[in-house]
Length: 177
Ligand SMILES: [Zn+2]
Ligand SMILES: [Zn+2]
Image (cartoon, rainbow, N blue to C red; front, side, top):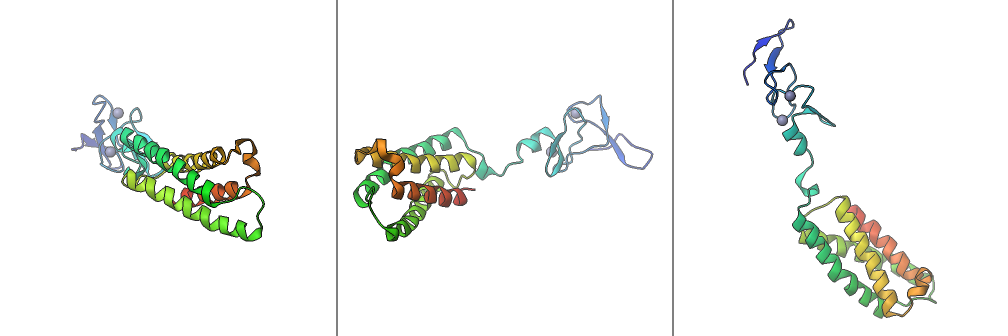
């Protein structure tokens, strides 16, 4: 981009790439395109042209519609599967402290499994939507477990299940951040 002229400090003056009638000394901090106050975008990394502002987020945080569908598919498969396993293996009520410690490991494992399944299905996507998908999968598994055990009305006394889901969400959250 060639300068029109230089100002009194010797800084180049351009005409804005999007508004040719506007003279400006501002340039995009990423691609050096001349920008004016009408089209520049403030970002944490400085001022940007509208194109570069849109590219600001790393691609792993950008979800395409297909990624939403894949994440939804993973939740749809894993929630019943984990809920079924949970209903078979883990008692709902009446267990001691040892079982609570075991629940920490089971929850961490379940959260890791869900997070990795989501990441693989979407080629490594991360961010709030993926975290929400993981949380929804684990809560869904808890609901499935309660329905299978015919204990949906007593879901808040399912201490092991709640603990596993809480630990699972925490583990998945960290992996998908
Ligand atoms: Zn730019
Ligand atoms: Zn402009």
